[in-house]
Amino acid sequence: MTDHKPEVLFVCVHNAGRSQMAAGWLQHLAGDRVSVRSAGSMPAEQINPAVRAAMAEVGIDLAQEVPKKLTTASVEAADVVITMGCGDACPIFPGKRYLDWELDDPAGQGIEAVRPIRDEIKARVEQLIGEIGPADDIRERVRARYAEAARSAGGGCCGGPSAELYRDGVFGVTLYDEVAPDDALQGSLGCGVPTQVADLAGGETVLDLGSGTGGDVLISARRVGPTGKVYGLDMTDEMLEQARANAERAGVHNVEFLKGYLEEIPLPDDSVDVALSNCVINLAADKRVVLAEAARVLKPGGRIAFSDVIAEETMPDDVRADMQEWTGCIAGALTESDFRQYLADAGFSGISITATHDVHAYAHAALITATLAGAPAR
Image (cartoon, rainbow, N blue to C red):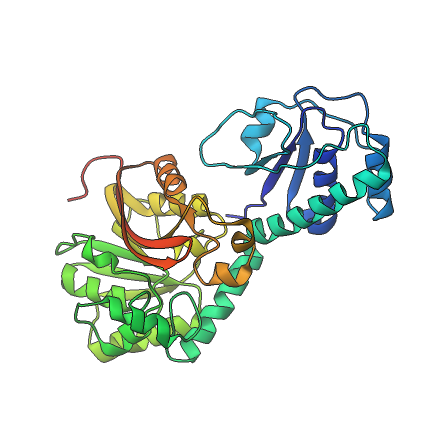
């Protein structure tokens, strides 16, 4: 499986001004890391000359660009669809992000009036790049922060030591009332306890996505018993080393810790009864790929039990664009409506999302359960 390159479509009625500037800026600033297109429902014959001139001033040549017709296929192919405050309507497809940027109209304006529009579009595009950055960039920043958390012997959720987070019961070990080896839970960076809603039974096979130092793995191992098996998946060597040591100290042998990515789970199809995750889905660059992978390895009728961060619909763009907030579990969080849609798209039903506690001014933790279509696994 290869990393998914985000595709962005900018839409304005005539595709002659704002959408062309936005596409030009994104191509210029992101290069080949992002696929960029623009279109309009009623494309003009040519791009606004003042727009061409304003963009040429900053080294972006639109001389060869021509307005293009908006098609249903172009919307369906995009990951992010951005209208430019000009009243254009796009077909709605599930699993896509739709934004509307309200911008002044450069039509009929001279270059002096176009320049501030150009500069505002640049600022918005720079924020957008921070939100949809390629999976490799996000993955490496997340890996580095979690490696540091492991080396510093525990921290608040989703990176960085934080006694405040522990004390307030927002993230980490203070959320647990179950018995597991102290070292495994002290290293917990989660935002909840997914095993509370996993309904695990003896003999089941469990996969913990982003297993960290192994706390949820060891709790699950006790519940499935010697005839069951629990896999822990993590991409961070430091976390895997601690998790294996914790399992050895606990004398737990029905576990196996695997190095790998959520987007490329190193297990065969239909091999797992239950998938767990604790404050990890929000960290992935492409949640749809992660949920599709979880569905792939689950048996028909298999279950998920996640604890994750859910974003409020009102989360501001500047929070979304902050990579520190991303690695801190906030900026990359899905809204509840998006999470439900992505799960349904991956083949899950019986979806339940139950809020547990606030973790940020614009986000809360939740326990998430769902069942994969097919015959019951048990």
